[in-house]
Length: 208
Image (cartoon, rainbow, N blue to C red):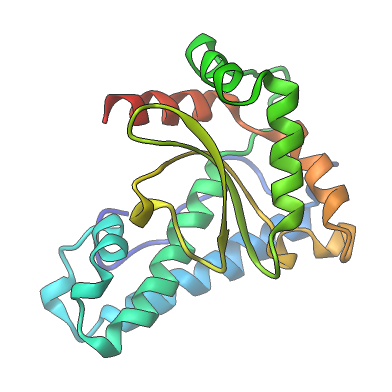
């Protein structure tokens, strides 16, 4: 997924792999319809603009203000939707027993006073997202950690922050199982965070 035409990336696990924490039908709809719609809409917006076909997803997001005015909103919304969803899905795993490595745990301890304190703060922020959006554990340019909320399909890329973990709190991420009870979804999500990818993302942030 380096440039136009963007393709729908497969899930890195089976649709039912996250049961009972996220149900199979939710994963099918979330990936095959919601993410696919963002991917298709992004391609449709760029179709008649070959001058931007070589732009990466990240460049489209960070350089949206350089685009013609008619392209800015559809590209910003749909490129953000693709980026956020791909990150979210990569940040989940059916494998149990994963944990932050030494470097990430040290950063968590420094920023929040401990892993349990971080997870509580993260859950609080995720529950507090108004309407639709995401909560992120993010690293800044110095490797310090912070918890950030974003609305709709806004990303961290324009804020100088690097994502480490994220939770999608749009209702389509949890409505079939939890209805409108976001707190129950957040409690389930904690069990399937992919700390191996989080470790990798944190190392990449430190390298930058």
